[in-house]
Image (cartoon, rainbow, N blue to C red; front, top):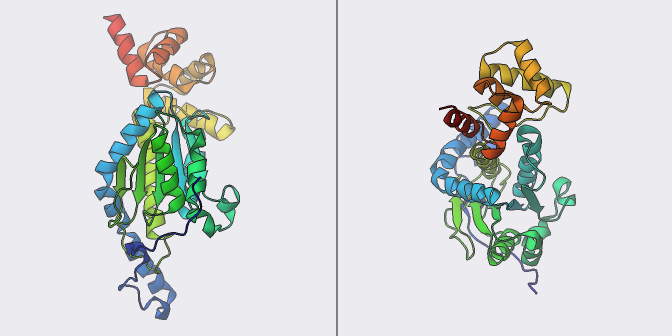
Length: 307
């Protein structure tokens, strides 16, 4: 049994004092905001430097989903809350099946609204959170310091269970711990307010998560061009968006697109393949099934059969 332990102190850059903001408490409001904004502008470049490693994590996640596995997010504090938000937004945007993404947040649901700071130090709880991890799954851990025991405990346990793993960290001095296949280091440096990792570190992790999950969805065929063709129309706003997407993708008129959507029982992808290829709805649906839900793949199959 792994017992809870205290975090080892690490001089992470996110904990150091920022020499550029030492006078922030003496400034008028606008200048306070300008100093914070100047620090925030470093985030995109730091994320950009980490894209090769993030791409490896995306490929591992895609392989897991294609193999029938799941993607797990693991985090504590700000990292865990951001991971929870990212996973929650995937279903309405990309019609993601319930079993594709799972989130494990130190302290559980209560920690989403209230700080439960000691929960992140419980390595054993992190390991226990991975009881649902299976061989072929992918686990993405997020921690600003790169050393959060809950996250590292989860990654080690997931690795032992045969899952692929990656760690997103804002500490360039932290080495990849045992059981981590990919280390994604986003060097955002010291915060405007020392140690407040909900600032640049948190912003960078939001960018990383959004980029990661969107890239996974693109690779899984949940888009066509840059259109959200997997969206499910569950209210009036989304029904209007579905029709607009279909018109933009095909260049056809309102009536023709509306009729196709009705015949496809609201399935945007099926209606899209039907309109772009000219085949009947049933054949369009079959081509999508045979291509694993990829619109371009379905069109390629239909074109090949037409030759």
